[in-house]
Length: 531
Ligand SMILES: Nc1nc2c(c(=O)[nH]1)N[C@H]1C(S)=C(S)[C@@H](COP(=O)(O)O)O[C@H]1N2
Ligand SMILES: [Mo]
Image (cartoon, rainbow, N blue to C red; front, side):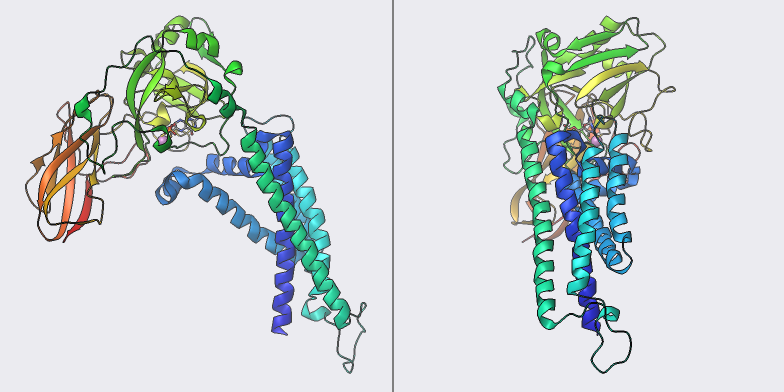
């Protein structure tokens, strides 16, 4: 009896999962064909990201790093799988409630899709297709499941048991036919769903218009090239981060599950708010301006001590200061709220955009147009501030305002309104838990305090004295800097700690704080074994 019951439950659950898989696949396919920005997975994921409290963002990044998006999608798929299994069981026991749940999933998806900032008129369509397909398939597959693997109460009574005769008497042979039928139909549903998902996603990658346009694009040569990188900026240690991060290795953090696809020909930036006159600039106008190159290190506020949400690139762009001057900023304004096309926003103190630092509307990254996931065609780069208050990718609007009048995306979620980068240093050589050969060794790493500069780094082994490390040449105060120090490694376990001093003379604080609300502090410490 137990096995009959278990099998019947499993079959019903499988019916539910296959039905929802079919719906999801058809929904994704519909999205690709008709409304690419409203893929059900992407809109639900996007809404979850927007709804997530600050600790959840931190946790996701701590657990999965820059793979947080994949983790989220897998999480959504798992939850949907569980709901689908439960709905399948419900449909065999209390029809049509399982199908109703399938339809509701689609309904919720449609509502979420319509409330996204970038929702088009037909944003609801993919989720509705998904819901209808899931509900219909749920009805049919659950019925087949119930016939092939009836729940114990419905199993026909034996010949000598009294009681009602079963309405449909199943012979062993017809039961076999039922089981093969159920297997065939549920497999078909799941397969169509999987094919829909795969084709949907592959085709969407193919229609990623921005990539095609980007590949064909040639950026103008800079009117003001960056000063040459000093040869002594690179210590030449193989295991140390290169001082300029290749685009493919550059960390990526954003709330965009589907990267916005912007055709530069259709891009424009509007400057408005507390200005004398609104200014709108198109792509052609922007790249016709005298563009400047500068090296700036970007850091994420969520970077934990020793973390790798940091990178340094050669950016090409136009000073935001000049564009703000065209618009004429009101003397009462103290903030610029930059908006991306997908609803993200960042609050940048006005002075960081109007003083003499290299705050730019960037179009180039390490000699190429911005990669799509790093903000193609245009993003902001502001030396000295964490990305969440300054580095808006896919930027389309600069709203001149005041901190007491407007809040940015992460500020409404508990993060600090202003985010100057904190003085930090990390050890990269040796690696944490590495086994080091006894004798002559090297300890090396990176230090940064953008727009202030790094004055020095000290290293301590176990409870020894702080020893000054050698700094490589800095590209500028806006970039990170390599450091190293020779070490005679004695056999045994050792704890290595580093701390930086800023160019202004401040010493990196030992006090450990978490990234929220305005960036982590504390010393980076690693344990190694010398053999
Ligand atoms: N449109 C948009 N821009 C954004 C974000 C975002 O979520 N959406 N995230 C910001 C954050 S938190 C950081 S740390 C930087 C990261 O830039 P990168 O992905 O190019 O490294 O982008 C910023 N710009
Ligand atoms: Mo960030």
